[in-house]
Amino acid sequence: MLDQINKNEEVKVHKGLSENLIPSMECSSSVMEPDVPKGGVVIKVQYAGVCYSECQLRKSGCRPRLPGFEVSGTIHSVCNTLPNCNINLGDRVILYPDEEQNDERYTEFIPVGKVEHVIQLPQNVSLAVAAMLPGGALQAYSAVLKAKPHVEKLLEVKPCVNVLIVGAGGLGLWSIRLAQYLMGRNNSAVRLFVADNSIDKLLTAQEHDCFDIIHWCEEDHEQYIIERTLDACRGGVDVVIDFVSSPRTMQRSLRVLNREGLILVGGNTMSDVSINLNALAAKQQSIVGIPKGTLYQLRQLVDALADGKLELPVYSVHKVEDAGHVFEELAQCRLTGRAVLQFSHTDTTTSVVDNNN
Image (cartoon, rainbow, N blue to C red; front, side, top):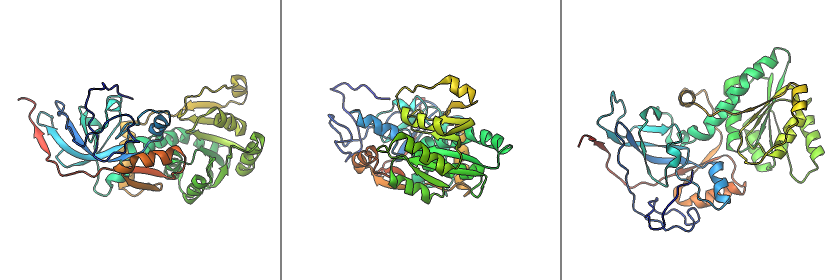
């Protein structure tokens, strides 16, 4: 994820980026446009989502990448050898993230060789909203899709299924909206609960119409938190979607999980977790990792938004010059909802590139 940069190498970044965002590095206000890959395109980034994983890097003293995993923009250049091309200059697009793009540096222009990963946007889907889809929204969508068959199976023998979402940040809010979309907003048989240690984030989750919120205050005794959770859920939890996946949240989830319950883990922490496999087997419980969302699922998200079937979580748009402050707010858990950075571009010329010359 982090690129190794020689001290003598000039670093090209957006004019006005905070020095706090890129510590111990000199910034250039010039923009270096990459070559167009053969059979590919170059995307000019307009918006970038602020990811918590990048924020964790910043807290550890490393530079978060920019634009990061979540970007939207316009087609800046197109290779003329692109076969059967229906991609045009100026098209509004998002990019499905892969390992190749994860190595990009701070840049306003992204060369893309795999044009099948470029998704064109309908006119009624804004670039600011679209920037949130390839990362957080896709991960939450994948989690809810993984949980849905288990919920449906339990509903065959239970009148009501309790689903607990651990974390009321961007991933949690997307999960609420996507669970409402996939399982029915007014489905009284599926009750969505959200747990977090931040009151402000929980109040935001409550505004998204979850069934109830549970304050996991880290200063409270652990047994009291367990009892509070069981009391709120009125009989335990059937499915847990845990994007935090820390030792503490995992142990809590296991203690409130019903027989034949399912825990979906996002693995956003690097800590090891000890689990009693005998107890897990005796209760026929399962722990499953949240799979990476697919390109097809990302297209489904775009279509759901365009058709007006999927409601958005709360989000805010910030100038890229304020990126350092936004990352700091996210690191300190003072930011509710999703944050999106807007790039203030000067006019540049789009072009078709002949790779045969």
